[in-house]
Length: 295
Image (tube, rainbow, N blue to C red):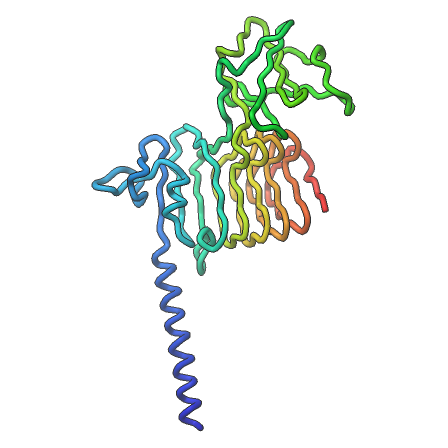
């Protein structure tokens, strides 16, 4: 009987040792993937910040980096002062931390933008300096000039917008279209107008141990950041979410998020929206509007 017990103890100890070895090996393999939207190339492997030789060098898109990524990896964005025009979606164990290693996206001050340009032929000229553009997707809207959010005209009550009341330099939503009244000597088709186009800047679902740092999410049609459900140990540090069509950060379901030294400001409807059992722990974070809690 003693021999049987010793054999069981030996087997258990061996299994624990093998598990720890595998865990240490996995942690050691956590890598770094570099993204450069100017000099990068998606044919490269992403293991170096600059093109070195052969296939060693940064990829061009965050999407490509995510195709390479494994649990616990770090994605580092090169900041060229040129926005990354793409969305990020993290879902499941592959985009979670492993052991002590967080799955990390480090922005180095880069901007991730959901804006899409208004083409010259997208404008329709009306009377008295009024112009109309109709977005393909409805529901949430925003209008920008040179990347900056333009003031929106809204009646003080829930009354329908009167187009004649829109001030110069302002826009309003009416029956699924955006109406903009030009400034003096302004011709909108010749200027750099854009709309909130892509839906969500960063979406997370069923992930654990994720850190997003030093990056701005702006000008997305719905949310800058949406933490859908079943997300734990999520850290947003030095993150700005601004100019989005619905809100800067939405925390939903049973998700838990820590927001540190960040800014959730100047979003169209909400800066911070918490639904169901979501939890957002804010530390030294600026809110432009009071957080909204809904069941």
